[in-house]
Image (cartoon, rainbow, N blue to C red):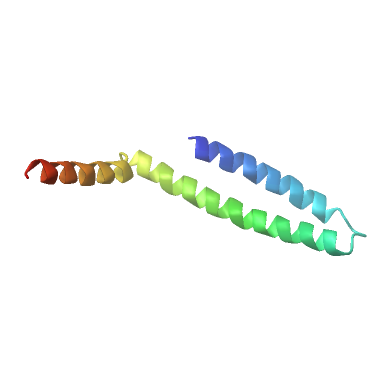
Length: 84
């Protein structure tokens, strides 16, 4: 839930930054190049963040498969220790 909300806010921030950089017609130099590079990197980070949030949401909808596997491993370790 939180990851999805943060992804949405990050996406809105990235769009605002892309619009601001696009409106800089006469901007040349290192600062403008850095701004454009930062916008591109922000787009990639947002994409990966959305992918991560989507994968997690799918896991939650399927019944917490990721957490259940961890719990099963921990139970197996506890049982093997208690057998000794």
